[in-house]
Image (cartoon, rainbow, N blue to C red):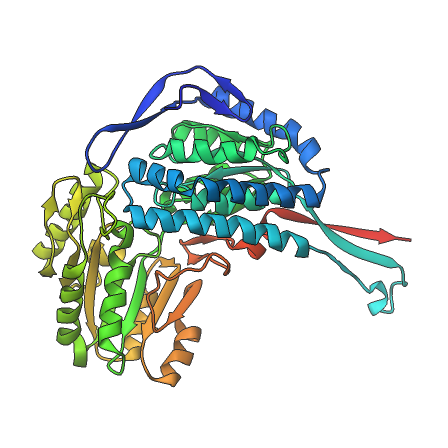
Length: 471
């Protein structure tokens, strides 16, 4: 239970809000709802803290991150259960998220050593003279970090670890669906012996709180992960500051006739239904060569039926519920609308107790259906028949999103072509577009966002270049 508002090292009384388990409807945690005044106070605290964080030694910041990673290792099972309690992610996947979070923090700590500038040859042109010139990277300032529910621990780490490691101060607004995860994680930073006082504050609240944070003149950076609709509002309200947006996706793959269909079916089932499809790179569209379309549909249906759904606290469960009842109703309505427009259900389209929507595969889907055009964010995947690689590429790129795409093929020429032809931030060959390594640059084109995550790349986002000339 979170009985107070949490603004860094300062806590204030306020109104409690219950957090309900998506699976059994029980109260699993509580948090205190903040308001715009709290957001402004947190920003003022961060502004003052930046005076110290920007002067802190790099060695201390590295030890800070390593200390948090070590403390998280010691409490890994506790955090895994917190994630499952609040967002009903299957416990095995929650454990994986905690492990990824630990590794992510360690990667940032290692990468900080290489956050360097370089010397500049001012006499490269005849109109100027030779002198000593260089640039260095410096902390940007106050960072506002806004995070979603689907990875309530690791996506927080993707923002606050590099932000604090680079010498910034941070105000974190975590998802209201998993406040305890964020609270306990933030405490690891704040209570560390290496922490700079008030470098990190946490506020909870609704869109009004988010707007107060984003529109303020204090932050230099706003880092947001969430929907494209909210991302658009942020860009309109942020003003002149750095904005990093990791937004929606509509991940697609092409299964070409030469591909290993068994492997493709197994991996596509994972990519479409992991975390109940609540992943921005969840596989949503599968374009299949007409020569193997029916065969692949059968194989995918068989693989999806092997996935065990149910109580997320059971070790062998692959898929639990959607985040709330509203999401279940939305998923069901999208499938029913697609059926009315001519799509056919290959498997699934059932609702089970505990907000569980059974993994659903649709075929004979057309390009104008919502399940193709929009981000579903549920366990629904659509099969579309195509007659050529060129047709698949055209259809895959015909989307306002461009996060990650993939291709399954044994043809080298198509592998090479896909790298150039796919209009997205990440291309995967012979695996699902849902594949992501935390160490890699990660971010999309078009409505999928601006900026990159990944330790090396986000550190560049979290710093400024200062150019120096010594005459």
